[in-house]
Image (cartoon, rainbow, N blue to C red):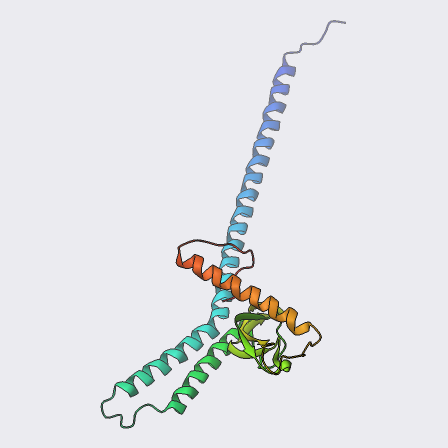
Length: 225
């Protein structure tokens, strides 16, 4: 049997190829459209996320702004009162003390709204290197004051149980040459606390001297403030 004419077969094959390419091209176009849509969604979500973060940041800063507004008003009001030639009596020490205490409380309240809590240290508390930054070691005659806080310069601040800034304190050191020190051995706890405090004070003095010479010292402990 003679082979049938194959003239129509190549044309049909080419038509199938063209159809397959057209379908592939249409599929690629749809994929490009979907990819462009995904990119648009991602960009929109990123923009919304950035907007939300900016809003959260502004909300976090609101108590700080409110505290600064109050400080501004206090300062302007007192400045005007002191500058008034007809103000009458000189500034009252008690009033000034109350004003400064209110300023400190406003600042502490703003920090508390950010999750930072103020903690106070009472004289007589045992020296705690984790929460106290010794600024001086002071001789004391009472053995009960050895290794304890005898004066407080500033409060400390913590967040979630982590101390952000230690309280600045002066630590008592028993004067063993005095009458109270003769034969007063104690349990050794005060001696250890005092030695630790003295080392910290010396280290702090060294850092200040280095800073005065323009040197930089990295202790790896951050700043106690």
